[in-house]
Length: 444
Ligand code: ADP
Image (cartoon, rainbow, N blue to C red; front, side, top):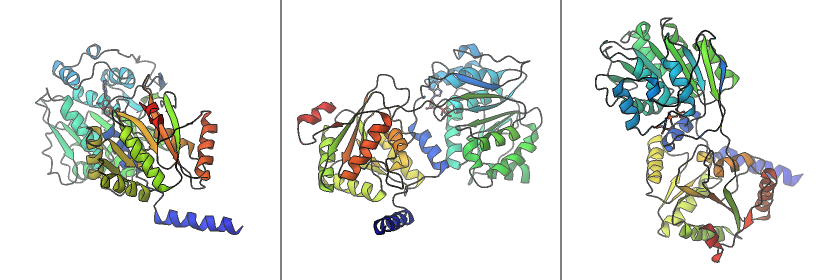
């Protein structure tokens, strides 16, 4: 019993220091996901239509031509490199463009094309010859609003008459003639309700993006409801969310009257096509040496190394850097700007190895990453195998034919037990690899 109480106090100490919990807020996670996602997620599920107005048939399209967009808008879509609509766009976009306008609630995981869908709808509906604000998009944070604004700017690059304005801190007041406004609920409340610089009652399109992140942010829900109340009943309302729990749905249905509800089930990560190995390392030094050998091997693709704590991650980064390797470190302490810079540099291939904690466990889907190293195996607060995190670290979604390699560094009988738990959980065998020998050739 003495041992138990000891373990408990250690646990508390590490939780209190925050070292093992390198967590990000929902807003930050959502942003990072957007930054690392440069391609559509290939989702094999079918769209589910949960509710629809039987009098207005839903149809879907397989091409952007079939949407009969304004030519300059179609040009913008193609200039972005989009050839065919994504799964969610096939159904969402024709429904959003149909007349009379219909309201919509749409849910699908990040990276499935929701932003592009509503930006297209917004740009189609705006009439640049009318000099007032016609479309408003609410985003939960400054950075997410900027991400959306950049999509609007790109897609409208052949529509020079459309004027876009950010409703964000630091921005000058609007003239009220801007066609599209993108911003956070706070600033929009000021401009639309307090100072009446934008006429909310004249909007024809209202979008609430990232509803799940929105309601997790203090005060945003209430502000969104107040903004929503100022709209005319003819304003088309759309709400998007990556998740679909009851709280989000209650909020969604309160915000959006008589919606068509569409949903795309999440594509689960799988361990298919992932070769899994482990390396026995008797000490931290041996782990470091294995890591350096593996780094030397990693000639083609890039690798992500996961550590359980910020301390281990920082130490490993220092050691590898001292030995002349170009590695990057991504941990929760950094500012949003620093994290974006690091991820951009990694994506561009300036660093071959990215060392991180669980900050990146989910949503990291950098195409060129071929190897994932678990410097420390993921454990929960009871020091049992955290199989879900293991799957998020190394699993992949909808990436047919692409193989990946996962290497687990095992430094104690405890970590060996954890690895065995993982093997049992997934029904897989993790193969032994000798990091000092030609065995590493297997990784090629
Ligand atoms: P979500 O809003 O669901 O997170 P996005 O609209 O941001 O998804 O799209 C995810 C990524 O896929 C972006 O990089 C975007 O440019 C790209 N994308 C979106 N629609 C298409 C399409 N039809 N074809 C190719 N790429 C697309």
